[in-house]
Length: 188
Figure 1 (cartoon, helix red, strand yellow):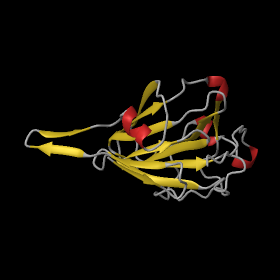
Figure 2 (cartoon, helix red, strand yellow; figure 1 turned 180 degrees about the horizontal axis):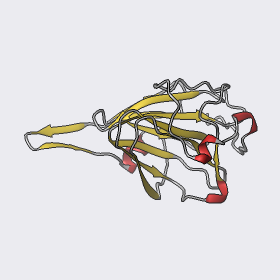
Figure 3 (cartoon, rainbow, N blue to C red; figure 1 turned 60 degrees about the vertical axis):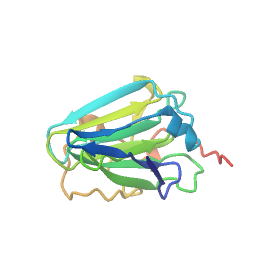
Figure 4 (cartoon, rainbow, N blue to C red; figure 1 turned 45 degrees about the vertical axis):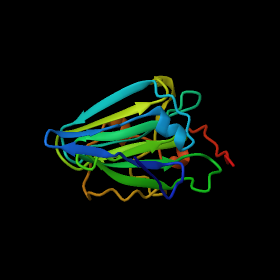
């Protein structure tokens, strides 16, 4: 298992060890032990899975307000996505910055998105399945979003197309207008 801190140190790319032989392969996709080894204490309580039929489908940027904020451990089990985490913690030195990584069934990478971050992804292939763990149950009253193409965030989505969006995502507010109750707390 390899853990790579990104430009935003709280967002971590996880590259699992894959063991293969003539039968196929095996990998460990989650262990509470390896999270604790890198100093994280996250108790995942729910697994989610989405399917997107069309290449260029964009889901996000989503988050839940405190006290129902969610950390997410995201992986793509069929096809490929460009996965993004955006820092929305007021007072953070990386506020409004984003990290993006390709997650695919082939590369088996995962992205750990901490609380205080908006999350979204764009499908790079047809017939995509994404699975993710969350450490808080879905709370519709705390569910919020930010517009996927907010110019103040300037995410460099990998496809220059009009994405397939839900009505909710198409009408999400800009970061400056989005409701957020996250603040940056230095954990030194």
